[in-house]
Length: 394
Ligand SMILES: Cc1ncc(COP(=O)(O)O)c(C=O)c1O
Image (cartoon, rainbow, N blue to C red; front, side, top):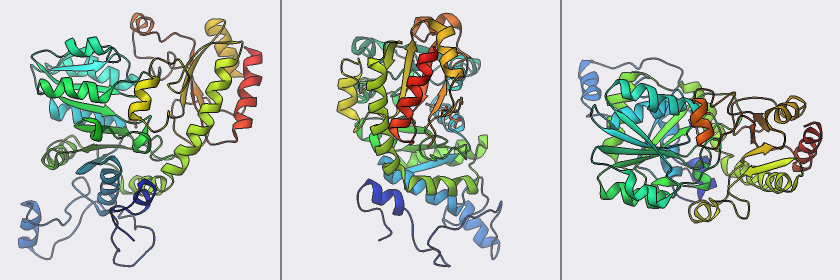
């Protein structure tokens, strides 16, 4: 069966795929900039959208098209647009939905570069940006103003795992004619499908779990409205130019085949690690929606089928103690990315969220000593033993 039918794991392997001309099991990588035409009439057909053939890889390419079709199936969208990075997906999507005079409402914690884009770059083009605590239902009620055209958030958020109620924000946005854009990088469509909960567009850093192996930088946007997908692709991605390489699309297609399998193991490992950290005498606080008593737990249970595998925590003794623990790490590479097979560790305030001003970091509860762990696929006994050893050094 090579179709769009079946459950998540089946579609992660088969969706969007037909039989390619050479009957290769794995899709070919179309490493070409351009496609050729029999004659000018054929070129005119494609360029007038009368035919679905290919022109130039910045517009379309069979390997990209297969990746887009598979992502649309997994997220429950009508189509998808592949990008060269998560930031290309986020910036192109937001630019496509906003114009001078409009306002964007964003959740107060976002990945560092996304925060810089909305707080520094968008205002230069006459687009105002307001940060709101979207985990607070009362704030959601009053957050949207006359000029709000887009509400943008990550759930779970990077790095403090805030959980935003997608249905609640969706209803508030729909009532005021605003669109909602959800960054689904931490959850992946395996654990959460925002389009089914009221979002208009889902964006991903596909560099993370979708790739899953730390060997490609990529992004993707998936939407419900087919006309919007066409506008995003041909009106923005093509013009802004952040197209994905066909080789990276092929790596993502390979990664997607095991997304469900990997997420199940990531989540199982993370639940064990979170419980271990929560009981550890040297740990001050753990940010993980799966823990009993965590502020986002109920909402997470209503919209996710698992809690994901990113855990942030505070070490007793502040920055000096946290740095000592991280620096003694032998099993976990110190690295800014996440969602890979390897457990990765970093300090958001000094690394991924360095661009935030210090006062804002403190206001949002992102201390200098917060440690973010992307729990990998090693044996959970080994992950826990390594953390125990590192914390003994703290
Ligand atoms: C939640 C989230 N969104 C977007 C991005 C940006 O993605 P990329 O690095 O692929 O541009 C990241 C990167 O870490 C991220 O963590």
